[in-house]
Structures are given as structure tokens and as C-alpha cells.
Length: 413
Ligand code: GCU
Image 1: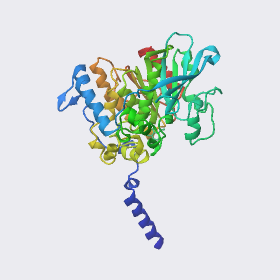
Image 2 (image 1 turned 30 degrees about the vertical axis):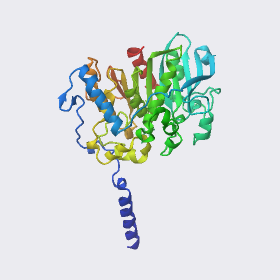
Image 3 (image 1 turned 90 degrees about the vertical axis):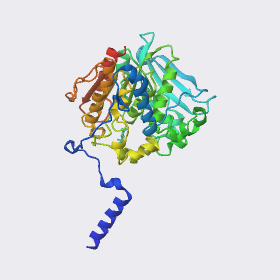
Image 4 (image 1 turned 135 degrees about the vertical axis):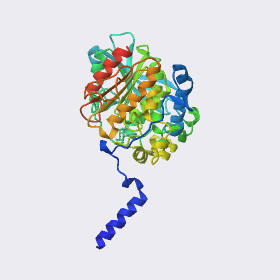
């Protein structure tokens, strides 16, 4: 009896101190509640029916709602930013590619905050289209090449002290990209801000707040990583081997969320790929399946601005849903990808979001997804908005890259 009372008291205490504990995420499709999405194509009760109305009023309105309620603002480039090429190998991959390492310095001199870029470009072309994507574990993990620099920043910031060269190489498929005439630019995301709740104190939200004219509270970490993608673009525009009009932004998972918000703010990216970006990325927030707003806010409070916490228990009050973010990419080619074993990211919610976003593409007379039914596994569907769900886990695989290459061949190259 005493044990039972102790157990009940402890449980009640837990429920009182952490209301979330009582409400686990729903992983059962039959328990998805009905929901009503904000109307993508209406503004103050007025129907949006053409590109002009969309570009002039609805799209800026949506971007500003995301700024104020979800991710925060993305500032421009710091005026003292400059690039220093630290290595160049014109004979990489048996002569098929040029491999460069470039440091993007955000302040004058070389001591301030910086981002270390690793770039592969095919040698067979004069100018190549390039895929861009931040990596999770450091540039040296993206390819087995033993001469890729392990940066000082990585050594002092990374929690994982083991140097695992090439451990993430299946996620990058450099050889396949080069063989198809594409370059790849990648950088470690935590170069700009450490991924934890105090990361902002040492990251660029603090170190660059004066030069960027933005306070740390005005943007969250996802916006910071989105900003980093744009600074990579700034460099790519200066590289003679790069076709800067054909740069495709990619991102996996949290970096997919960051890529979406980054691309929404930077028109220079010619196409956008969201790989398993899930909650806070492509997945509809109102569909209560997998990770949800309260959970993401609790686990990753630093990713979003403070205001987003208001919606942890009131997602229906959120003035946007993620189909609206995807729609802001229109008319640029957009690819949304899910994985069968990635229920946490809510594949169906990612799909439906892309389906609803397709109506913005229709304004430009561009076909998006053909149907509101999910396509079969491993069978991409759609034109300017394309979607696939592949077999396997939360990851980026060769299958994914093959589809992205085909998509880029068709709509970007
Ligand atoms: C966690 C998080 C997701 C995120 C993922 C990742 O699972 O809940 O929102 O996408 O990490 O970045 O790998």
C-alpha cells in the first residue's frame, strides 16, 4: 500500500511538473484528429488567384508570419565577409574533380567566426551546377579522402572526439554526383552555432549581432543554419567553376528544416530538396502524428524563436502550417522525400504538405503532385513538386540521391 501511494504521488508530481509527460506523441494513424489548415490562397478573406497577387501580397505575408511566429528573421551578409581558399586539388577523384577547401570569414582578418567549406567540382565542364548541404558531423566525415582538413573548430566544439573519416559518406555520394556532372558544397553546421540551448552564446547570434544588426532573440538556430547556406551561396557566386544560377539546396532532417527556411528567404537557390525534414520542416504541424510542436519545443527550444512556444498546446492557433512554407518555394523545383521507417517525421504529413503546396505552383501553371494519394513506395511522383517515400530508415541514401539527380537533370540542368 505504501509503495502504491509513493508511486501515485511520484506520478502526480511528474504530471504536474511536466504536463507533456501525460501526452505522448501519437504514432497511430487511426488516432489522427481532424484538422483545418489555414487557407494557402486567401488573404484577409480575399481569394488569391494569380501570380501577381501571390507575389505581391500572400507570399510576403506568409514569410512575415514565419518570421514572427516560428523561425525568426534571417539577416544578410556581414560587410567584412571574405573568402580564403586553403587547399585546392585539381586532380581529385582520379582527375575527375577539383576539390577545394575555402574558409568563409565573417569578420575582417582571420581570427573571427568562420565557416569551413568543402567543395567538389567536376573537371569535365567549364561551369557546373552544384548541390549544397550542411553536414552533421564535420567535413572529414563526408568522404574517406584522408587529406580533408579536420578543423580546429571541430576539435574544440564537437562532442564526438573520434575522427571518423568518411563515416557519413553514404549520405553524400560525391562520386555519383561528379559522374553526373554535379558539384557538391558542404560545411559543418555547428561551425556557426553549436546545436544546444546555450549554443547562441558562443555562436554567430552573439558574435555577429552588431555587424548583422540582429539580436539573438530575433532568430532561432534553424534560421542561423539557413543563413549559413546563403553565405555558402555568396562564395559559390564568386567561384568560376560554379554555375551559380544552378545551385540546388538540400538538407536532411533538422538541416532540412533549416534549408527550407533558408531557401524561402533566398531566391538564388534554383531548387530545394527536403530530405526527411519532418516536424518544423515539411510535415504538417496540425497533423498529430509523430513528433509534434510541443515535443519539438521541449526537446529543441533553441531551434525556434520564443513565440513558437505559444503554440505547444495550441497548434490550431498557429497562423501558418507547413504547406505554406513549401508554397513559398514556388515556382522553383521542390522535392520532398520521406522514408518508410521514419514515422517520427510523419511521412504522410510531409506528403500532404507538398500536395497542398502544389496549388501555389498551379498559379505559375506548373504541375506539382498529381494526386492527394501517396505514391507507392520507391516511386517518385510529381513534376515541379516531386515526392517519394523510400524503404528504409531516417537517412540520406544512394536511392535518394539518384532521384535528386534525375530531378535536377529535368528541372535545373
Ligand atoms: C530528432 C528531432 C527531429 C530532427 C531529427 C534530426 O529526431 O526530433 O525533429 O529532424 O532529430 O535532425 O535528425
